[in-house]
View 1: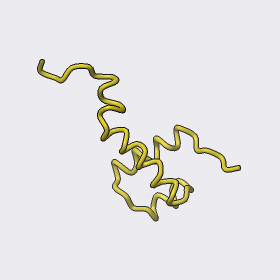
View 2 (view 1 turned 90 degrees about the vertical axis):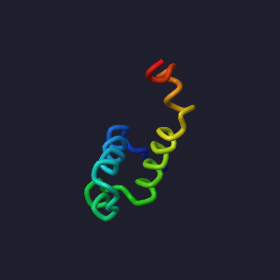
View 3 (view 1 turned 135 degrees about the vertical axis):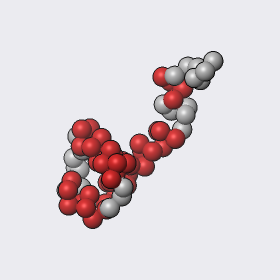
View 4 (view 1 turned 60 degrees about the horizontal axis):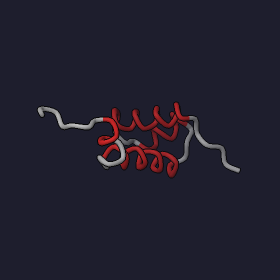
Length: 66
């Protein structure tokens, strides 16, 4: 059975990717996570942030300026 990553580590990896860019070799060395796992979690977070029905509409009910 594979162990799941801690949520803190997932957030750290995704934020690091957003801030520093995607230097995969550096991320592999720094976080000791394999490449498919990094891609998986970055894709999940990007999907949630890009699909306004998954996140935006749940927390912000009216557009700014109305």
